[in-house]
Amino acid sequence: MSELNATLDLPLGVIAPAGARKAVRHMLIAWELSEPDWLDDAELVVSELVTNAVRHGGGCIELSLQAHEGQVLIKAADGSSVMPRDRGPHADGSGGYGLRVIESCGEAWGVEDLHGGKQVWVRLRPCPRQGD
Image 1 (cartoon, rainbow, N blue to C red):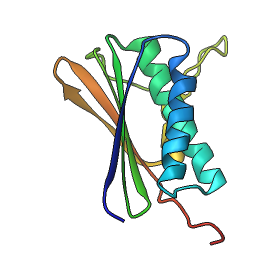
Image 2 (cartoon, rainbow, N blue to C red):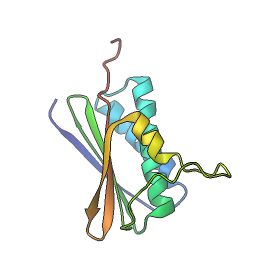
Image 3 (cartoon, rainbow, N blue to C red):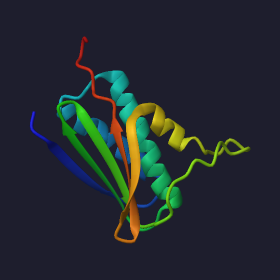
């Protein structure tokens, strides 16, 4: 399989995470990366990245996917230069688990400066083939 790429521009708002999850699921299935549990993990990572960009970022959100040989890289860029950090769970249960979720579903993650904003990336574990 050659490298496959997709980019989505998302509005800042509460509907962005759900729209991103749906679009990414359809794209990955179209790319024949469709193992159900792996897809669920990919959606969870997308949800966390986009939710954090909506809650803590600024400007528009750009979500990009790259896939090659079953390996997928997901990137979310926003207009805030504030770098993510583990703040631990909030006492009221309103969040704080995002980086832990990303670490549990991904193989690696990082943050890069991007034109006054930032881009958070997650490399997912390779997608297993159906029936493996």
